[in-house]
Image 1 (cartoon, rainbow, N blue to C red):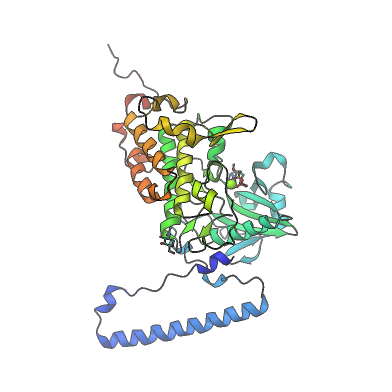
Image 2 (image 1 turned 90 degrees about the horizontal axis):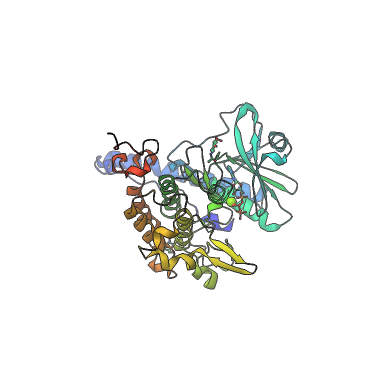
Length: 411
Ligand SMILES: Nc1ncnc2c1ncn2[C@@H]1O[C@H](COP(=O)(O)OP(=O)(O)OP(=O)(O)O)[C@@H](O)[C@H]1O
Ligand SMILES: *[C@@H]1O[C@H](CO)[C@@H](O)[C@H](O)[C@H]1NC(C)=O
Ligand SMILES: *[C@@H]1O[C@H](CO)[C@@H](O)[C@H](O)[C@H]1NC(C)=O
Ligand SMILES: [Mg+2]
């Protein structure tokens, strides 16, 4: 709401070729641009004025959407291709889907369609007409926080399009229920993969590095390519979702805020235990470095296969950071704390390097943490080319290649 008024359409930048034109042409163009922009300004002022007078409580700068969406790198799935899906309106540039249709698509919120449960409700698998499979988040808004997170997420996600950020397909509402429709991520969350029944066995070392790289790419986009910068504020393994090829995307933008609003007192302390940076917990200080801290915790989860906070005994918890820190920088101890599922499957040099990156990310002092862009660049050489990095397959040590481990033991 308040936070997003600051999103602005990128200014029209004059190109160099215009400078080379003769002054006459320049003049004509300048006048044309000036009159067009004046016209546009007058028109938008009029629109805003009409909007304000018609819907005084709900106007939130709807005239500025698309600016970031237009910079998206891939074409995200859209509902417009699916002709039979009933759209009943638009919320900003987000399609509003008929509530009855969503109810039907989830089998009336059948329990077997539940993909996961969050703080304010469940996420369901749904099959819309035209066989489009989607994920449906159902929020119960008796709690005003849920309503606010709904508005926040729809508003923000509608402006973001990136291969490593979840796509918003639509929304809907009915009485106290709010619905957000996302692209379906077939392999669920990183949390489920790591700490669910398979205990990370589907995730090889290289896949883990790819997931870390994808996550860093998504964060870099939020921190450096959105204007003003977006701080996710709730990065954790349950908010990193995986598609069939284990491409990772960031989800859950209910708490995200844009830069410039973090010093205001209206932001209540929130986040998830184990991922929250110490300066935020102690002073409420929130910057892009808080996301880097949370990223470091996720990196430790990938490396060690442990949850960010382990219960040792009732009422006694230990954070992965406190536990792992002394061993991460000790090369003789590090291999022993690696997730048993991936133990001895990676180049030890790569292991030391990732551990060093994780140590930097979880530094208590935010200014000692790297920028996510620097983290990203140190991860790229560790990820095979086929998975989006620059590591050549030939460089892989023998043991990583499954199928023919005894290739060179011929008589
Ligand atoms: N688009 C999606 N595709 C597939 N599974 C999803 C999708 N969105 C969410 N899920 C699953 O549903 C779970 C619950 O999501 P949700 O974001 O509501 O809660 P959470 O991240 O566990 O906790 P919190 O409410 O604190 O964010 C996720 O962890 C994930 O397993
Ligand atoms: C990933 O998703 C595909 C398609 O749904 C499924 O067949 C496969 O078992 C999943 N793998 C894991 C590890 O979840
Ligand atoms: C946020 O804004 C401040 C100035 O208001 C700036 O110094 C800082 O670099 C910005 N942070 C990000 C992540 O862009
Ligand atoms: Mg979530």
